[in-house]
Each structure stands twice: as C-alpha cells, then as structure tokens.
Length: 210
Image (cartoon, rainbow, N blue to C red; front, side, top):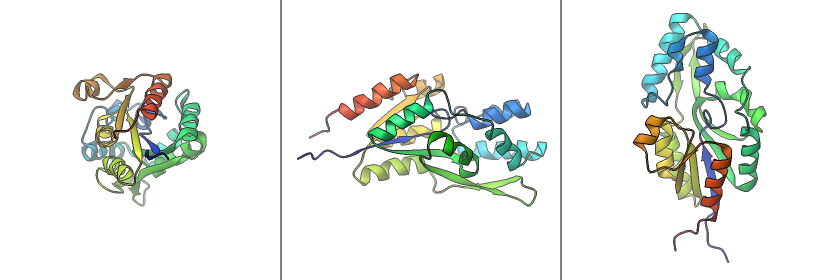
C-alpha cells in the first residue's frame, strides 16, 4: 500500500508557456516603457500602477491590449510540454495576469485550470484598477496544495514566483533573468522544456521523507 502524496504541478504562465504580454504590447505600441515586467520590478502593485499611468497617458484601452493579445501564440514547445505534464499529474497555472488577458490563450493551450486576477475598466474602456483574488496568491496556493495533501512542484521565472517556489516541495526556475538567479541561488535553473521535464521527472522519482 502506497502512502505517498499525489503530485501536483503549479506553473506561472507568462515566460513559461506564453510570451510576456506587456512586452508584446510595448513592441506593438512602440512604448518601450511598457517592457518593464515582474522580472524587473518585484513590487507588483507599483508595477501595475506604473503601467496604468502610461496607458492613460497614451489613451490605450483594454480592447487595444486585447487586440495585441489575440495575435500572440504560445511559446514554441509549450503546448506539447503542458500536455505531457497534464498527462502525468494534476496541473494548475497560477498567474499574476488577468482573466481578461489570458482568455484568448486558453483554447491554444488546451483549457488548463488557471488562477488569475480581474481587471476593472471605466466607461471609456480604460484600465481603472485591478482586483487580486487574494494578496500573495501564488504562495498561498502552493501552501494550500501542500495542506490538502499534494506533493507540489512549482515552476516560474520571475521575482513574483519565488514565494510560490519556496512554499512548494520543490521549486524550479525556468529561463529566469540573471538577477533572479543571483538572488535565489537555491532554486535549480532550467533553460528549455527538455531540462524542465528532466527536473520534474527527478522530483517525481524522488522518494518522500519517511
């Protein structure tokens, strides 16, 4: 009789399965200020208000951003890798993006379970604010999965993922920037889906502590 806990994988979305949405918006609108992401700014609230000020200044609406998102595709190899993970264990994507942004991607990646936040707009269609499901939701989700009896592996690339990685049984960085590697040297680093799969398989084959 096996007493091991069932495995569960928790992933970030942008930078792991999808390109960074805000970088794509920056390129399409020719506003390099919007290239700033959670790879650069660990304070998410500060980052979002910075973005909203730029959008307000330029008169860019939610519909304008969604038009850019509609043209984007998952990262090469992401669909196949995600299909493998989902065939292997329970899988959840936990993102600090918004349902209004990620909805067009869901059919492209097979409608996985996604935890995201919600945007508020005004009567002009401009971003007026956002609503977090819960503060520090990535960490809380990883802690909750463990409390529910899952053996959890978490994967992300940015500052805002590191608390989730730390709360999981195993955290793995995927294509992180050098500053994140320097500040969190205790997390293993993977550079492509083959390396990430090997790291996850190592986690799956690792015996649990007695």
